[in-house]
Length: 122
Image 1: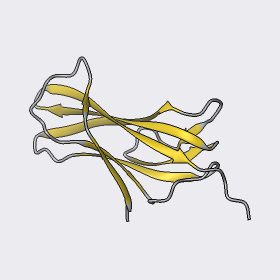
Image 2: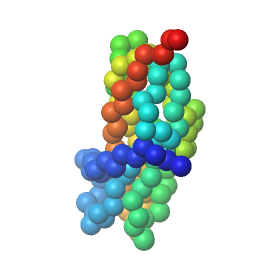
Image 3: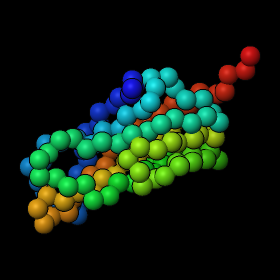
């Protein structure tokens, strides 16, 4: 069950066709706990409901990370995948979606800020 869930507004990018679609791109996490450095987290992207939208492709990427930090995304082209964070700090993940409405292709994206805690020692 996805406990942590963040709904993010769709950001229309230049070059996209304007459209009346009022859906949203969302990012969901497998837990409401913050991940710790050296650990992973299941991330899940979704596209809001729209009867005539047909998702063509998705892509996960890192918009920002602490200097020298590494984010490993198991399958950046899957809707649901694991992300691993090497160091504590603030990360921003990007989820991009390409979808068709009729014969027009659209591209939307959502961003999510994630605070990664230092590993717990005990």
